[in-house]
Image (cartoon, rainbow over all chains, first blue to last red; front, side, top):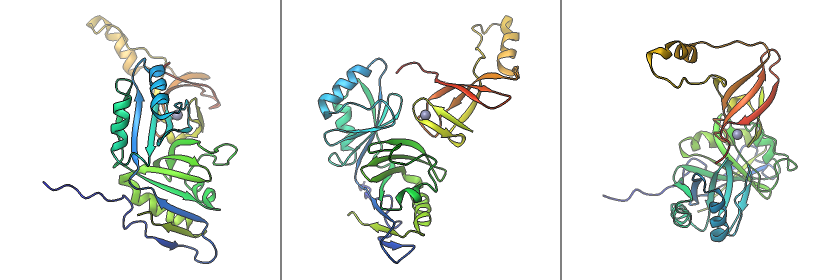
Length: 200
Length: 87
Ligand SMILES: [Zn+2]
């Protein structure tokens, strides 16, 4: 059997270049974060304190206790629910992250690989909050949703996990709706000008 | 209508799924003698005017089950708590 070819969720969907309003600087810049390691972890019963200690030892960061993210050695842990986190890594690409977590947190948390199940895009720029507000019913004002803040919610009726990294927003959607999501975003950003940047 | 999830914060109704009355209790017995208790549990509901406890699932958010205390005459939500006490 031949190995399936790995391809990004937005390949030939998000066409690099300028979309919508073409004059002046782009209001929003979009970049796909392909080949990230993505995994969920959920604490096992009665293991909360032991899990905290193990994450601290292995990744040098305390697991967040609410809808915020904490950045450790090579891994960002995003709080997605009570006792549940979504882990994101550039250094542990694709399924390597879930393997690393499962090894280091064995018996303390249940780990599932989500690397090929989600598409992650990074959006930023002067109009980014205006564009996201068209489909995201949460307050993105920095006073409320500051650096590291996270939310599991809907964007234009599609499930999304969003977190803030400095001035940028990262959005993770299920891979099966990546095309619909991008279509919505391109439309929503057209009035401000959208710049799609290639990563690979 | 908005519900303030203890984990996620205030979110709109679109994110939640209604399950029903939070006060009904499943009968312990499955014997024929518990028939009336089962009919009550499965089919019969009070329709109170005023405060009512109901179960809501934060299905598009943190996936926690919530017990919401709502005034059925004004829709005012006076309390929201997680059903699961600890993880
Ligand atoms: Zn919630």
